[in-house]
Every structure is written in C-alpha cells, then in structure tokens.
Image (cartoon, rainbow, N blue to C red; front, top):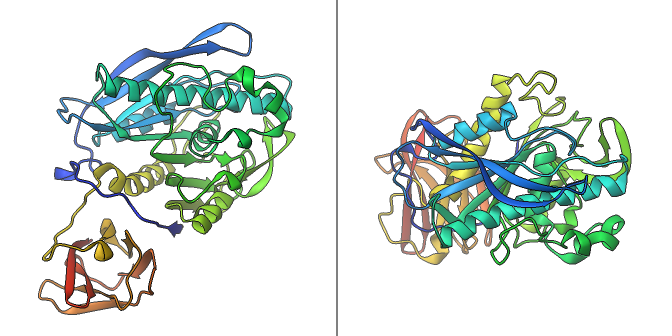
Length: 406
C-alpha cells in the first residue's frame, strides 16, 4: 500500500459509539427516486433515478452521503449491480446514507469520440445527483444530508465517472475530441437536472477507475481513495491507452497509480491500495456477479478508514492543553496497528518534538519531524495493544491525543 496525507478540515461532528466505523444499523432502502432527466444516446428522454440506502431508525439531522455509480464500460450495467448494492448496505449500516444512481449508457461506434461522449454523459448525470441532494438539503430536507459531506464513488466506469466529477471542473479541460460538441452537451455541468446548486463532491472513492489527465488535479482539489490492481487490462493502473470491451480507442488515461503520484506532488490528501499482479475489479466476478469476500473486505475497510476523519471531522482526541493552530494535528487511523499517521493541519512548526507515550507518560517512540512537514508515518508494530498518547511539544505548549493500539 502507498499512503499520502495532507491537511484535514476539522469541525465538530458526530462520531460517538463507533458511527461510520462499526456496523450499527439495519438498512432501509427506498427505490427508484427520480433525480433528473436528459436525452440519451438514442435521442430519447431518459429519467434518471437512484436507490437510497439509510440507517434504520437514524435520528442524525445532517448525515454524510455516498453517491455510487456502477461499472460496465459505459455500455451496460445498472444500480442493482451486486457490488454497488453490497457497498451501499455496508456503509449505510455504519451510519452513512448512500444513493446508487442510474446514468445514461451506450455509445457507438467504439472509438475515442463516442467513448468520451459517453463518459461526459455519465459525469453530467452524477453531477445532477450531487446537485439534487444539495438542493434537498437547502429546501425540503427529505434526506437529512449534510451538503458539505457529499462523497462520490464508483466501480470501473463508475469510478472513472466519480474521478471526473471531482477533477474535470474547468471548461479548458474538456478533451479536444469533443470540444466542438461540448456546448450541446451542456459544457462542464450538463443539463441533467437541479441547476443552480453546486455539483462539486467533498471526497472521491475510486475503485479501479482513472482520470483523463492528472494535470487536472490541483492543490485545492478534494481528497481521493483508490483501490486498483497492477495487472488491470481494462482500466490501466498507470498511464496507458484505455480499452473498451477489448478494443483500444486511441485515448490515454491516468489510472490509480499515476493519480496517486500526482496527488502526492500537488498535496491532495489521498490513499492508494495496490493489488499486486491482480486484474480488474477483483472484488466482483463480472460474468456472474459473485462477490469475492476477501477483496470486498479490503475495499470496505480501506475506504472506511480513509473516509472516517472526513465523516467524523473529530475523532478520538484528548487534549490536556488547548492546541494552538501550529500544533493542531490528526492521529489516523485510530485505533491503529502496524503504522499510525500524524497529519499537521498547518505544517509542523520549527523545533516540534513528536513522541508516543504510555499511560504513565513514559516515552515509547520518538518521531523526528521537519519544519513545514504535513504528515509523518510512525511504525508501531512493537507496541503491545493498549492506550497510548501521541504528544506534540513545541516550547511550553504540549498537546496530547489518545491513540488506541490493537
């Protein structure tokens, strides 16, 4: 696995009792809610719908939402794809809400121009779904969504869609092959519904997807977690020509490996989990829809842990002193085993001393940090399970945060 962290936004939220981490709820599902409509490949008007998954009996007023898009090469598939149903149930049982969406499918012939148009149609539809929930949050508030915690994710083609929703956000980024038709398509935002509300997501979940060009990723962009196999022959792990149903289309994309490097270079918080020597979407058998439990478990755990600080905004902290801006930091994951990461909201100040102590205050681990460093990884394999404290000392100021090692 490869990790990279940058500053998290931290505001007060609900994360009591294992919410967003443990399976705490039964799940209620509302089916086929219309969120928009647009003209499909055949020239017909298509209504766009989602299935909504939510924790049963939940009373939280502002809940994070994950909008999921299925895979299928932009040619086939639907929101009842077993992996999307499974992911929606997994995260709704942990306190998230999830919307598994339809988006417009099909294109012909299989070439660069038609493929790109299919991608843009899907991106426009997902953006309309983001706007739908922001509109609802600011008007009828049927779904009790926090408009500042809307995450988008998807598998394969759905992952490509989610990544583009996050990073294809300037008119000049529209691929040259479809620039001439972009106005008719609706430009960057599209015309699939709910105009007048922001379509930007707050986090991206990329399962075997890619970005059209890593140069679209800039320092202010949203965080992303990716899982991808190095032997993926459908959506490349690195930078390579993409194939649709085995047909090269003359268009290169940057898969999760390249996306991770770019995110590191420009300071976008990101996590990449790499399956070495593994092919496309190993968590589901695309021929029969069977879930591979081992791979799916990795998907759930990895995305759960990465999203946790963004869903909670405040996790497992014990401050003996009120932290200054210079000493504000995040301990993640928590609980942890093997490694723990320390993220400094404003970069480490000069002369900072970072240690891990036991309950008695004895220093167990010392971790050198440099001025301006955004994150540090500390090896904790030798620590026995229990409660420790990550201590940051800068002059007369000391800030302690609880760390649970399992």
